[in-house]
Length: 194
Image (cartoon, rainbow, N blue to C red; front, side, top):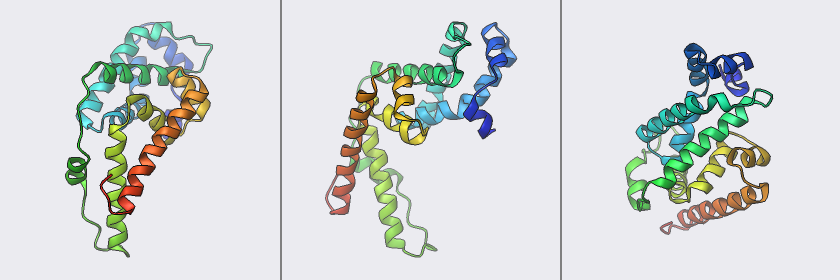
């Protein structure tokens, strides 16, 4: 399934779905559901909201699928639909201030006692939680670039295509996001609040 997910649905399946074939559309949803939900989660940090965003993406896909150009690859087009729907939704909602203290207290699990270095494992878990909570504070455009580049494993060019941005803008957003995350990790390493 992972190989099929990487390649996307067959062109015939997309053509049938665009023509109104419900089973073909279901195939596309099945192939993309995990990626869409995972991207939604990376953008919001909330699994229920990620599920809602996923449904919005597929509802929108249903309405725009007939505009897909079958002479072009489906995956980049679908990625663009996914990112546009999710980013538009995030831009339209009010910004909720988040506390790094609350995020750090809410999700940290104790270190695995079987770990060869419990202190190191705890520090790693703390660093990962700081990155997650700090990522949630970044602007949605920066989070999208980070998620597509590092989670989806896309090249700079593919991220630029998915977000309909110039490659230099993608590079700038990646740089700024990494600097913000690096600063938060440096603060944790020095024992300060991020």
